[in-house]
Image 1: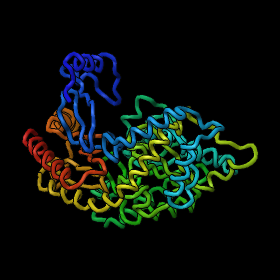
Image 2: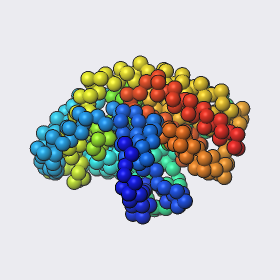
Image 3: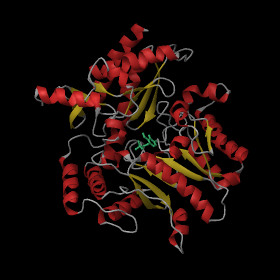
Image 4: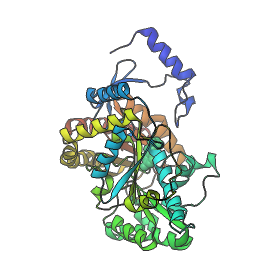
Length: 463
Ligand SMILES: Cc1ncc(COP(=O)(O)O)c(C=O)c1O
C-alpha cells in the first residue's frame, strides 16, 4: 500500500535525522535513504514505497509464524485491555504463570523453572549470574568463570558481551566482565586449520572440539569454572552445526567437572531447527536454556532463562533469593502473545512442516554449490549459512578490503534490491545467512535460490 508522498518524506527524514540504528554505519545512508519497512504479510515485507521483499531472515531470526497474523495481534490487544502491566517482582500474573508451565512441559529433562527477561542478551546475562550465585549458595564460591566458543555471539550486555567471541564487538567496551574464556567452535569446513590435523572425520572433529572445553576447564582449574555457553547451531561465523557426538561428549565433560551446560537457544528454539528447543534436535539436555526471539514470533518482546530443578532448589528455601530481575521481564502482553504463538505452532503443526521441508531447503541451497564463489552450505532446519570463498579448491577467503567491497559494498544492497531481505555477514569468514519464516516451503526456497544465484554470479564477476 503506497503511502502519501509527504508522509513518506517525513518518515525518511526522521529516520535520517533522529533514529540511531543498531550496529549501523550511519554514513552509509548519507547519500541515500534508510531502507524503511512498513508492513508484513506472511513471508513478505513491504518497504515505504510499496515494494515487496521475501523475508529471508524472519526479521532477525524472529518471525517464525510469518507477518500479519491477526490472532497474535488480537492476543496482544486483549491482554493489554485486561492487564497491561504488572511486574514479576514477588507477584505473579496468569499469563506469565501459564507460559512458564507451558514452557516447562516443552523443555527436555527437568528444566522446569522459567525466569523471564525481555530479550536474549538479558537471558544470557541472567544465566551467568545464576551460575555464579548457584555455586556461591551451594558451597563452591570459586566457580565463576565461563567458557564459550570463538566467533559466537551471545548478546550485548557487558556480561553477555564478555561471553561473546567476536573481538571487534568487544574492543570498544573493554574492560568487560572478567573470567570469560574462548575455545574453538565446530566449523568443520575449516577443521584442518582449526585442529592442525588434516582429514578428521566429523566424529573425530566433534570429539576434538568437545575435548577442548575439558582442556580449558583443566587449564583454568575446575574449581573456578561455572558454566559453558554454546548454541545448538552457532550462528555467527555462518551456521556451524555440531558434529556427531559433540554434545554428548560436552555433557560428559560438564558432568565430570560440575560445570553447567548452558544451551543458548536465542535463535535455535521455537522451531528454527524443526524442534521446539534446539538441544532436542541433537539429543542433549542442558542445565539452562536461554531463549527469546521466536517465542512470540516477534509480535511482542520476551526472553527466558529456563533452569533445571537442581539449580532452583537452593533458591526455594530459607532466606535465599536470586538477586536479579527486569521491570518488563515476562510482560503480560508478551506472555499472552507467546501463548497464542505456541497455540499456532500446534494448530498448524509448524514443527512437522519444518521437518518435512528441511531436506528440500538444504537441497535447494546446495544447488548454489555449482557457483565458484560458494564454498560451503551448512546449517540445520530453516537456518543456513553459505560461506563465500575466493578459491574453492584452497578455501581461500577474502581479504579485508575485498570483504568490505563485496559484502558491505555490493552484496547486502544487491540482494535487497533484488527483493530478498537476508544478511551478508563478515563477523567470521564471509557468509550469507538465511532463516526464512517457518511457514515457508519449496516455492519460497526456489525464489531464494534464484535471487542468490543471480546476485552471487554478479558478485563473482565484479571481483
Ligand atoms: C545466540 C544468541 N544469544 C543472544 C542474543 C542476544 O539477543 P538479544 O538481541 O535479544 O538481546 C542473540 C541475538 O541474536 C543470539 O543470537
